[in-house]
Length: 387
Image: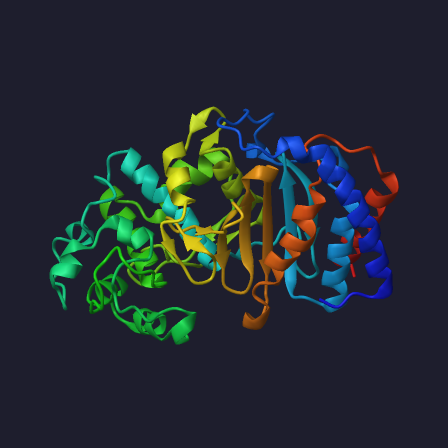
């Protein structure tokens, strides 16, 4: 990123503050074995705080938004939640407070939660259930011992062994073929195998679509309907759109449209080990397994159960064109970006997170009030919303 001299001077001053803040907060970095209960739950809406009220430096956040504005990055919104409070919420024109965004492949992480709920409620036997057992009435092409051995866990971890060819590496050729087929489930099940399942990561949108189909096969409800009852409803998420295949199966790999605040609720559920309003929506064991590295991956350091893993301890849901739900446990933080970025700019949100948002969290307790810097932050947010 190119900074002007003014920005460089500001960053030097901020660095000095960061050093002091890190010294104050160093004793708070140890990972707790149990989490403190939330002070409130944002079911009916998030509460807000100044960044300083949650131990964050407003000036770093202001610099970040200034860079987004100056560089004209195609970022639509940035939402920062710390300790359960929104400390920064920027909607960048023409995206506004009523807009929903296609979260693209962040959808996969939502489907992962639904798979656990279906297991917990007895609809699915468990992770080692063979994939083909969910579709007993289908005649499947290219069937061999590897395909017979493929399990639900292999779908979740993108280690199916399918010759999928439907990711960005192949310009989504296989995905386009699936979407043009008469029966998307049959298309994926018929794919040839090129390796033993459970061994090698190969990003496959078709695998995530099968997860949605399995939810529908076992529960009798689409993933969208199942989520409304067992996930979205309890979290207070009510305004979503989710496209379906021609056969009426929710598109499990993409096409879920949500508000950024609701995306943050998904991250906050996982930050709180699957608990919400005193109820265990998703088991803490599932949260841990989903967000632990199962296999080395491509776009990030590792992959769990439809969640990406970063070696820093952060985990994330990510989607095409710059959609992100970052969960940063050691900072008690959830950060959401929605974007309309070109492929070459895909990692700009993660760069901004690492260079500005995470360093802004300099203390675990409130910082002194800083009305001047908070006013500057609010001013640039207003400017971005109403250019």
